[in-house]
Image (cartoon, rainbow, N blue to C red; front, side, top):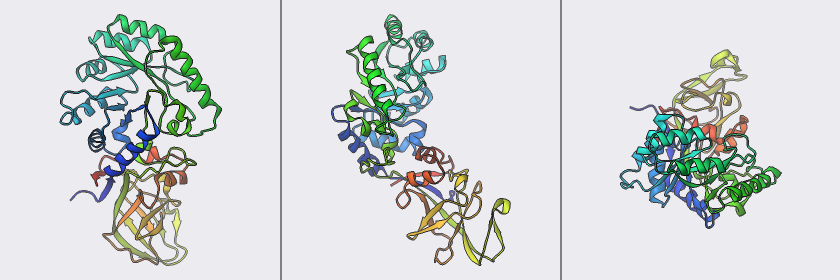
Length: 358
């Protein structure tokens, strides 16, 4: 039997979210961001479902992810016409070779990347990434990079940049970056397609959808702007099984470091998932799980393989399944308990947790 910790992946909810984002993007194309194993949801499940929903633009981090995605989509797209953008570009000659053989579309920000592609006889297209204020990746002189690419026989797919504060709709930096992006593109090559917005940006700045939007977290059902919900549906439901229920007496302790001491007699459930499965250790003593419409406090330290819950005054038994986030507990709410974001919950789900489509 497999370990009874399962991330249920609702593909109908995924497609619902994709359609909502299409509507919000108006005339812009939607490039689905499926990097990091589709934000932990399982690239092999997510990408084919999005393809069948009509998606033909995808983005991953690097060439290895791009090659993996190309292989996953091969049965649906034998001609390899689907665009797969590499948001981090390429790192070495091996990446450049993969980009060439797998017909990937790197996002580049410096001349060294262009040199590596030229050496690999790459004859496809690239996105030019420009920095507009986030001070992460971005070409300092996009015109120079464009000329170098064209001289090397490399086509230019368009321009990309990334907003730093899109999840704060009224932050002045949003408009500053949009204006900077427009100015850079106009100066370098005004006819080329443009892509600026992530999930939160689609909500915060709908007038800047431009030619291509790049939603990530919204695809997976986490509302990117809390005060402006879109009606997204959660895609992942993280569950594990109760493998033992035991009674403890007042004064007894639970889990490592004896950080929890029972004030009265109580029942605890030992659940088959811990931080190696993606249940954050920071939930120790402050988190909750859900079972039979009851919220159950995390009791004591979360262990590598197990989490203990207070199930006093319930009828919960060994064999019951509990939810850590999903339908009863929103991932954004769980993340806020421990001062993090839903991205870290999703991408932290361990390899030994089965992703099961529903």
